[in-house]
Structure formats: C-alpha cells, structure tokens
Length: 92
Length: 453
Image 1 (cartoon, rainbow over the protein chains, first blue to last red):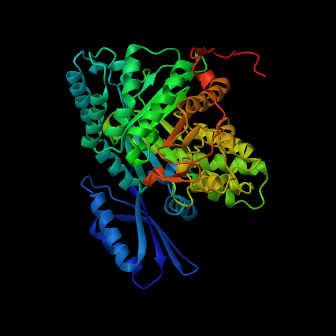
Image 2: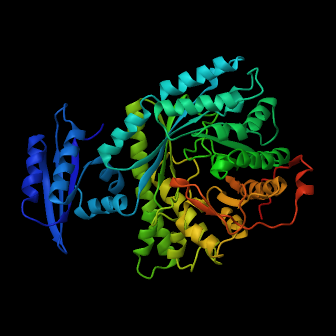
Image 3: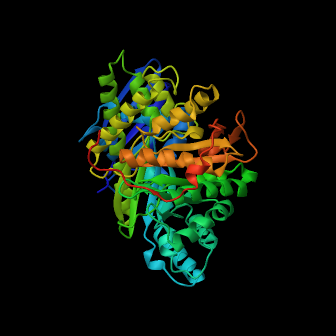
C-alpha cells in the first residue's frame, strides 16, 4: 500500500520567513508535521520534514504545486516526495 | 520509520545533480491474439489491443513521477515480434503494420514502440522474410517504431544468411532516411541472444514466454556511479568495485519500487527491473567518465576493457542483490553517439572500432550507435555484425549491432541526431574486404557447451 507520509525538503539561501511560509501551506492542506530538522551549511538553508496527510481526498498534485510556487517566491527549492522512495533506497 | 537527513540529501542529490532517473517504463503487450489473414483486420486488431492496454500508461507514469519526485524519462511499449503474428497475413508487405504501431503509440502518447522484430537465429520463415524486407520503408515512414532482428544464439549458432541480409537492410534503411542522416538505422538493432524482457530501445520486444501484459522498468544512473567512484579517497580496485555495487543496489531498489507501483496502479503484472548504465549526451551522464574516474587517462586507452569489465560486473551484482526481478540487459551500455566522453574519445583518436569491439565482450549490448562511412559496402557491415555475434554466441551473452552508415558522410564528418540520440563522429573501418566470407551464407554452428577454456 502506498504510504500517506511524505518527505519534504527545502534547500536554498537562508532568509527570514522560510519556515513560516512553507508550514503555512502545509497547514492549509492539512499536512501534519511528524518530524522536522533544519541546518544551515555554508549559508545554504536545508530543512527536511517528515509529514503526513491521512485524508482520502488529499490532492497531492495541488499541494506540490502550491509548495513549488511558495518555494519559487522565496527563492528556495522545495520537494515533496512520498516516503517510500527513501524507504526502498535506504532500508532493507 | 524516520530517515537521517544525510540519507534524504543523498537521494535528492542523486536525482538533482547526478541525473539519476528511471530511463523507461515499458509496457510489454502480447499480440498473439491479433492474427488475421486480412492485413487490414490484423492492423485494426493490434491497434485496438495496444491502445486498450496502454490507454493509461502515460497518465499513471506521470502520477508516480510526481508522487516520488523521480524523473521518468520515457514511456514505451514493446509487443510480440510482428513476424510471428503477421506470418498468416495474406500480404507481402508489412509497412502498414508499422504505420499502425506508430499511430497506436502516438494515440497513447508513448515515446517509442518496439517489436517490429523477427527471431531468425536458426532460419528464416516466409513471414520473417516479409518483415525484414519491410524494415527500410517501415523505419523511414514512421517516427516511433523500433525494429530488432535476432540472428544468433548460443544454442543455435549464427545464421549467416540473416547476417548477410541485415547488412543490405541496414544500408537500405540509411538510404531511405538519408534526408535525416540515416536516422532509420538508430531504430534498428541486430542481436545475438536477445533478451525477451528488455525495456530499452531499439531492442525491446515482448518475448513469447511472457504473459499478456507486463511492466518492465529500465533504470539508469552513470552520473551517480561516477560521483560515487570520484568520492572515494585513493581507493583500491576492490573498494571501487564495492562502491559501484552499493550504488547499483540503491538505484535498483528505487527502480523496482517504481515498477511495482506503476504495475499495481495499472493492475498488470510487474516484469523486471533492468539496471543498465545508459549514458545520455548530457555532461555528467557518461559511462566513459566512470572509466576515466578509475584512473584511465581517456576511454579507449589500454586498461579500458578491464575497467569496463569491473564496472559491468559490479553493477550486475549490486542489482541482483537488490531485486529478485532483475532482467533485460542489466549492465553498462556504450552507445557512442549518446555518451559525451565516448564522442570526445572517438574525435581525439583515443577510441576506435577495434577497441569498441573488445569492450563489447565484457559489457552489456555491443557496437551501439556508431556512425560509419556512408559508402561502406553492405558485406563489410555484415562482417562487423558477424564478429559481434560471435562474441555474444561464444561468451553466452547478449551482443548487438546498431550502426548508422551515414549517407554522404566519411571519416572526419559528424552526424547530428539531436536529443537523447546525440551526435556521432564517423568512425574509421578497415577497407579490407570480407565479401567472399559473407556471401557463403549458411550457419556458423553452435559452440560447445563444455571444454570452456
């Protein structure tokens, strides 16, 4: 069965309001954060989040579009990927 | 289950900067239930079956691509070798069938459709002959149709009549597509020991031992392997092999996941994942670059064959550990026009046809996407095919030949195909003749399966 959990990564130049703007979109789409980690390596802002939406009517494509749009506005790259891709690659 | 940020970033980096991708999701469709003596009814039958089964292939693949954030470059279809199912058609020309396949492929939105094929490793039936004679016109009048002819197997030997015939067919195909630099030949491959579940073009067809409909997936990632090798600090050869194996394992796992998700969504069986390092002309997506990262000055230098053997074997081992459904070709490809490092090596004189032939004895596929002078005699093309088939037959492996005798071009010229097919510098061949050998015809007997020394 396909998982309801997603890995969200945000990479780019650090500035004020990245976390606030990105998590606002997530809240709008009823996407719950399970785990969050954030570091700044050589001025590059890197945030990885583990999140889920268990609603049957969750529109992933619309969520991805809105997240990408928000990322472009902030000048960062946002990716929303189902957790299975990481599970298959890094866990046996 | 949680992931370490480093693991997440490793995957993202593979996709973003090292060009890891699912090269193809290929749907194999059995057309054996489409036979009919009237070729128009036959064509209608195959059109209906292909468009029915593949109706949602592109839509589903795009959905999976979005969900997992992994680029899926090509969506393709492979069908039962047309020579088998058109044998009973009361028509001597199968060009209309190729046109039908092309239309069906366009209707469902796939990039290529393979299976305009015949298996003639021991002998040629009238149906096989109809198909082979239709190839030049079929490939020059269609966009998406790919053709493959299996002329040799380890169990049957090499059908030298077919080898002689294919030299002519390749020449004719180049001439009929001369306004596009002989591009028809880029869609035509001659095989020894052709795999029946290969998702890669131009050699994909749906084998006769397969079920009605399957999903096969081809994964690629020369860039990922290259950066893994480059990331090692003064490695020994064993460490290089180990690193390639681990990387191949991870890539294969991802490929299998995508294949299983697509097939589940479409409610058809999952066939195989083919882990092949298939280069593209883009910088950083080269098999030659991996060889050079191992310490070879330039691809083609002495040592290249050994480095490629190590690479090919490690890729297979990693893949076989990662999935029980490994199939197809699974190895390293060396298509000259599609690999920036190989193009450079041919242009600088570091890589020649003799070295390429040696390399094919230790890696997947064979003499692939190589432009040769347009005035090459067809018997010379047949002789090159015969050499390559011998390597496959004796070594019990798949080998193939995909040559483009570029009309009006000679050594020093370059043929530009564009896109994934890239550009090919015309390579120098021996001018000595083999016509008297080729015209003898007959069959080179199958090799012994014992006394393997």
